[in-house]
Length: 218
Ligand code: SF4
Image (cartoon, rainbow, N blue to C red):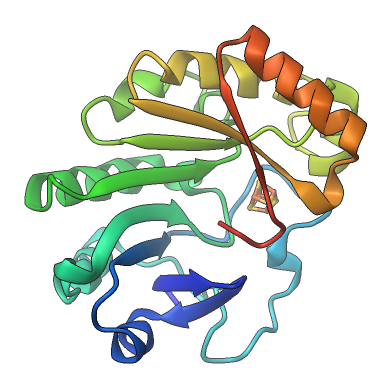
C-alpha cells in the first residue's frame, strides 16, 4: 500500500477505511520507500509478509505523480492530517518528500502535515536539510530511541555508527527553527522505565517534547 490509514496497530487501504467510517476525519499515511539507513531491532520491515492486501512492503517505489494521483482521490472532508511514514525512512527520498509536502500545502493548506523520521536526513544527504521543511511541514516526529549514543546504536544498528545519535539530536534542534512542532518519540515496549526517565531529562535539557508511544502506534 502506498496510501493507507492505521487503527490499533493495523494498516488499512484508504477506501476500506472510508467505507467503514464516512464521518470521522483520520490521519492518512504515505508510504514512500522501503529504504532506510537504520536497521532497528523492532522495525516492522522485518514483517514483510503481512496480509497480502495490507502489506506496506513496496515492490517498487511510487513516483510523485502516482502519489499525487492517490491524494487527489481522497475525500478531504475525512482527512485530519497527512503523515509521511511507512516501512522505510521518508527522507531517503527527500526530493520527492518535499514535492509532496508542498503539493498538500498548496492544495489543502488547512490540513496538518507530519513527518515521522529517524532524524538522520542531514547526515544522509551531507547537508543541513532542516530549512528545506519551512512552510511545508507542521510536525516533525523524530525517533529518539534511547538516552545514550551507545544504546541508540544497539537498537538502531545505524549504518552511521555512533555519530548517528548526535546527528539526530542536531537535526531535532535545527528543525525547531523551521517547523512549528518537533516531537521526540520512544517506544514503550522496547524502552526500560529508567531509560524513559533519562530520555525525558535529555529532551527537557534541549527544550524538546518527548512522546512515549505504544509499539506499532504511528
Ligand atoms: S528508522 Fe524506522 S524504518 Fe528505519 S529501521 Fe528503524 S524503525 Fe525501520
